Image 1 (cartoon, rainbow, N blue to C red):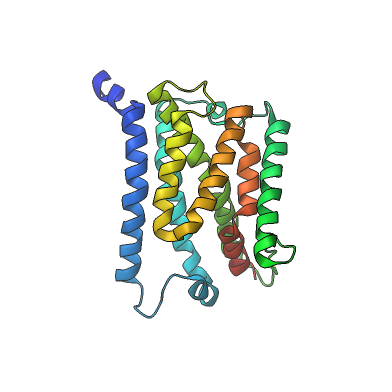
Image 2: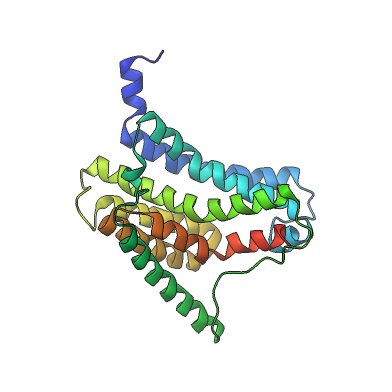
Length: 237
């Protein structure tokens, strides 16, 4: 049985936020190192390799679930947080959906300008001879690279705001610091495009701050994340 002092230490938002960022950063490097060590040297875990061997999709999907969702969910359970603390509620749902839909439409317009024709990030799978295992994995991929990633950001915003006691502010320390660190960490893998992802998460954070509802951003990001749809098409073809 945990002592009161140890439990108090584990429930400290400073510890939880720091541990979550460190877990995400070091875990990303650990996964990259594991791939380099254990996968054949002629296989890079890129889109081409995933198309040739769909079973490899298990690696990025499970990595995303563990590195992004694991600690926030564990800490939320330990703290007995309510889902509504992170915007998972029906309250102000329509406002959340409407604002998130506007963000998604702006993003699709941006993609269309880049491609010089009307386009979105959504790729519809072919559904040819799909196994149950691959179907489950595809669903997990859509959830991991959509709702779970938004939950990760909202969780960090909320708990960083608890540290600075800025929960009631719209442009709070939690929002600004979380988005800034999110952009910095994604710069390692996304380069300058990390600024686009950071802008999206900033907008979703503002939706959460305005509506106290994150369901709209969760659905919108699942539709906007082209990597989630790429994994689904690979697994469900």
